[in-house]
Amino acid sequence: MSLHALVAALVGRGTLIVSSVLLVALGLCQPVQAQLISTTRAVGGISIDTNGLLEPTAVDSGGRLRKQRMKVMQQIPDDLNGLTSIRKISLRRLDAAIQRCLDSGEDLPDNIRYLAGMQRIQYVFVVPEQNDVILAGPGEGWTVDKQGFVVGVTTGRPVLLLDDLLVALRSARQNSRQVISCSIDPTAEGLQRLREHVAGLRTIGNPQQTAAGVERTLGKQQISISGVPATSHFARVLVAADYRMKRLAMNFEPSPVKGLPSYLAMIKPGPRGMSNMMPRWWLAPDFAPLLRDAEGTSWELQRASVKAMAEEDFLTASGDRKQGGKANPVAQRWADNMTAKYDELALADPIFGQLRNCIDLAVVATLIVKEDMLRKAGCRLSAMTDSSGAEIVSFPAPQEVDSKASLLKKGRNWLISASGGVKVDPRLVVGRVEKTDSLDATRVRALAREHEEWWWN
Image (cartoon, rainbow, N blue to C red):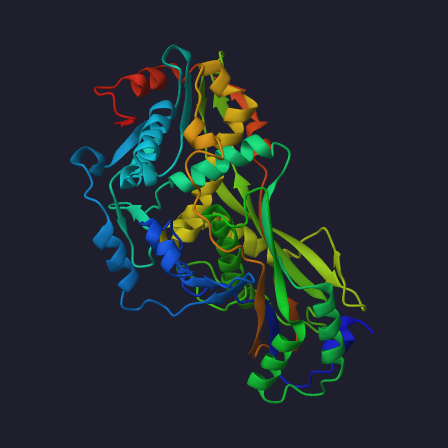
């Protein structure tokens, strides 16, 4: 029996949507104090138990988390507060500053945790005469927004986090051939149970009860992560961005920006509906070719952003998913629309900004490894790259999440299950390179400094 025939057994006017319930409050950010990790398993709006089950926590409508983070946040030096188009970080000097904290047993200061307020990485410079590799990009002072993200005080863009940089550097060294990815998908057994369950339905009946029955039948969906430690903040950003994308697409939450209607608002009922279709979306890097000078010591990341991609899956009579390899036009239009709106989304919902930051860091770390920059510069980053160095913040690894069903009145009956994830292959980005002679002046300005700190404007 085809899925269309099964769904046709649902008499009435309703749309049956099956998706993932993952996070409600998406205020994911690095804890501002290590002791916050040990005292609670709820971080940034989600709670993960020791079995890896992800559940939402209560929405912090009173802003208690923000107030707590702001209370312990250190005062920002005046010369770090101002907005600048290009702030520079010396990786050698940063590593030394981290090592001094490790040797003395002191906590890392905020300016190290938040990488001097840098918000993007636009340039990478190899400086052999200083035994250094320098990162440069826009930056400013930082604060905590209402969702709990650490963001720029004027731009609202999430700042780069040291913890994510450590994960990117160590993962690039250890897994040079592995793609960074996450996916949230129903199990084959759950889909088979759902097929049998739907076959026994003759009417929509009570919408709430029907939705609850579908949720129980489909069961928990599996969360898979590769390329970075599943216990890392980096991994949580991947999972949260994947979830949020699906929530927007499947109309579980309204878009925070104008001009991005849900996928369900875009589709129109036809004579056969869309009963055998499971739209699949995932997020991926969207970079122009990297620029480099003739010597390979100056690099620029161009048009670094994120794109949404679409593909169509089909559900077989046995309940298995079969990859179609081609997106339906409406699903593709929704993906294209999200790509066009990504910059706005990254501001309105900082989880998308954090995802872009993590992709920046993954690309830069892969570039450093691929071009052997540390050896060429004579630079060793033991505190940052060695597992025995600075500790990476660890969370319980997300493994599974309950499914959620919703009934909407929209013409004929459709069964739609949103799937997909995030896929980051930095090798594809660093493999597209163009030479230029336009980086010389930028390099000269970037290397000029007035003090010996690990960062400068």
